[in-house]
Image (cartoon, rainbow, N blue to C red; front, side, top):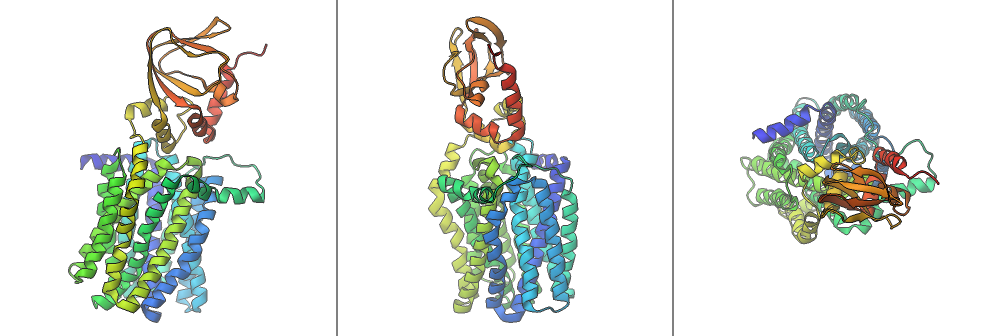
Length: 544
């Protein structure tokens, strides 16, 4: 417990992470609180079929737009994009509140409500893509993901609970009004967060460049099928989540015969479970393998819903929905951290955008599917059917997902610290560092061995962990290199033959990185690239 508190405390003491997480908490409250309110509004108008239709009307446009709009998070400063998302959401929620309060036509109300959901679709991937830039190291990234999940699940508890209380006292319009104010406060929290940018800005882009950039995430996932499968598995869990959005209302009113406010309370119970799961997920910090908790959490998530359908009761339903929240939270933290480790940093917003879009389409599918099954076979049958979806998908995908874990090296604190002391690598975000770790080779050489020969093709980057070496050019001594130094960057960055010879003068221990991994890591981050170019310029031999 003390270890978990230290992890949470470390995040809480970082002002940027704290503001980011607090704004995300408010965002999640608004997302879930208004979602309950709009579904209750729809259920009152036409039952489960109406609720499913309303969910689809909002989620399908957002699901289609999200993967392409997320390019903004890779093209523009992510802090500013997140501020714009929260501000747009606050405006859309306020407009929906006004439409509901004025009893506006259904189409007008849904237009504003859909605009709010589209804004939400941009906010979450931007938040997750910004986290690696704000976190200081791989351990803090996993901790930040866990604390974000704590904040998210706290929002899932507080949002629907507050929504249920407001619905019992007044109505949906007031729910939207309250959360418009909450989201506006979140926008102000991140207004001066900083860019978190990982690409160059300011240059003009042609239309075809925008199109190519927007589909960059899809192109990457088409080539890396393991990561693509991970995205599909994570999105598959949202089929169950979408079904639950409708089932909370149907279970409360039609199965348990309770007042409509119970829909918010059941959703809140799942949020309480999610909060517990997020607290447990803090133990994932530094864990070597993440697929087992991903799979186990998914099985608990779906199995608990099946249990509600098998034996429905007012006393046990909140507990079982809470248990499903525990599983969902653990699976989410595991999957998101694994995705951040695996996807290229410069495509991270787009990959999370694809996840967000796929998740929203999955939510729509789950909502409509649950509505159809409820109308055809009843609420209990819907619980049994949809509860099996995520576990079945996870079991089918277990082996290929496990390959990602086997290929990934667990973060090593000593090696991470060594890389962080390298001026070239110091600016890199944690996922980039972890990808370097996965490709590093440790090499021991005796004194007198030639490590780099002048005129040869440059194919690797060397970092000296222990020992000393001499640098010579044309047979003449140039300088010496010792522990903590690096060599080989000139030939790699300038695509020229080796400009000098490096010979071990003592027994040495080296960390070796291949050319492609070095260039991908360094050139993909502006600060790292600039520092590498400065060093290469300093070490280039004078022109003859």
